[in-house]
Amino acid sequence: MRGRWRFALPNLITCLSMTAGLLGVSEAIAARFESSAWFILLCVLLDKADGTVARWLRATSRFGIEMDSLSDLISFGVAPAVLALAFLSGKAAATPLAALAQYRALVYAGSFLYVIAAALRLAKFNVVTETYGSKFFFGIPTTVCGALVASYFLTARKYALPIRTLEALPVVMIVLALLMVSRIPFPKVGRRETLVMNAFTLVNVFFVYLCGLLRIFPEFLLGCAVIYPVVGAIWALGRGIKPPPLAPPSEEKPPAA
Image 1 (tube, rainbow, N blue to C red):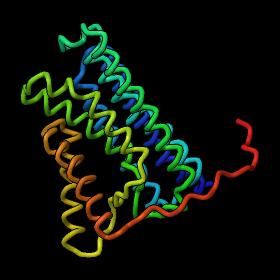
Image 2: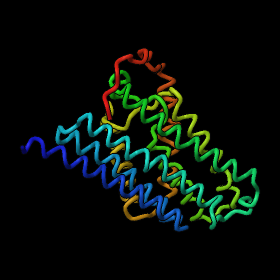
Image 3: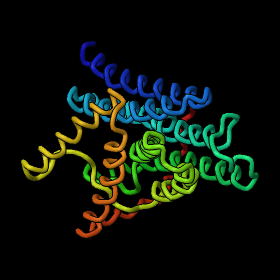
């Protein structure tokens, strides 16, 4: 029985991440936009933690993978989209462009495409994880996209950047949607080949958790969310990393829900 209980802890962390994502949605609807964005960033920390704990306890499972994906869809798909919708086109919209039907349509299109792409990205990850291996993602992870949207929003608000900076958010989300469903390689965060790189990774992870938990320095989190996929993709492409060919869809009858 003890062996089975070790699976409960990573799944509990996943449930906490899902709860934080739902709080991000509710805060956005209540027009507490900064709070909503910080809850999304808390989900990023919890998402990393549940995988780490599962590996430490040797408690990875198919059930845990499915739970994690459902949580990620809420936390990094739905919550950022609701934040953008509420801020840019809701009753408490903070931009004059909200009065324009064309702009509202762009906001809805960007948000909806972002959620759909997140769902496709997570479904693909579940199906081809064994094919892709443990070193690379192909298509930018939803976790990074959620972190980028939230930290982008918080940084713009912290420095009182022109409203045009946030009015561009629907376009940013469309670009992220395309990157999620792409097959561009991105290295996974994990153990590196040299002591220096491992130390660099650990220091950055420490400060990411510190900033996320204390709700400080969103600009640092934004920098990490931008630099990681850009540098990682350039490095992977420079080394000639290519996605493996996908197997044809299985014709087996799916199990009943």
